[in-house]
Length: 101
Image 1 (tube, rainbow, N blue to C red):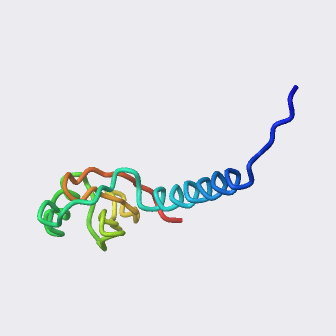
Image 2 (image 1 turned 90 degrees about the vertical axis):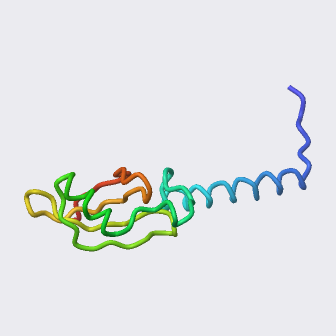
């Protein structure tokens, strides 16, 4: 097998590129893969979000905007338990749902 000579500049460039990819992956996972940037004109109003949640069996307790991309919602389910929900601002699709501990 032939010895491989590594150019230190290429190694540094590859290492820095990997660091950027890893840190951007952390940001991506925090903001969610389906929360797209879109103008607020296309967003549902908080009142419309509340109506959509009622249709799905939830009662709104708190709503806020996360990273200017998604609605982060605390609601109660039909059993009265608190549920954390991440909702798409235009389609009202539930992207993430968990029960706080």
